[in-house]
Image (cartoon, rainbow, N blue to C red):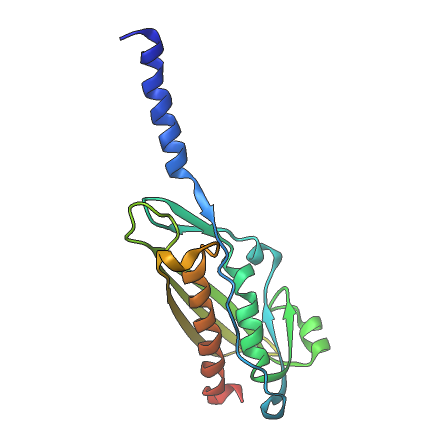
Length: 196
């Protein structure tokens, strides 16, 4: 084996490991969110908590072909949360902390929703990296304006997409899951007697 060939083997192995370690960025914002019907809204005002740290929280999960995908679930799903609440209540505000009493009182919020999001993704494909299955689990702890825990609501979404559907929307399975989550969150809030 020549010295030139000796160095090619570890170099090729290093390049392959770097490629395998890369996570492909995708977006998982909803395709659509619940329609706001002004005539049927609850007159109360509510807030949800979303910090800059939440929005900047990057998550990496499985894609296809042994690859990974990366995304920002809180940033992408903020619209799902906000629009679900806007489909129920007259006004919805965002606050940076559930303990920010001044902001909560200034907005006149009756309830404060504190979201926790977990996600999963997968694909059986050996040749393409976009995930064909994507799961979102959203739980919101709900406090009153004084910070007392009232209840919690949970919404789940499971999106699927086939390779032929991806085109340039590589996060399509995730976006479908986000759409489900938004509608389900709306329904969970509507049917919770403590949130009327």
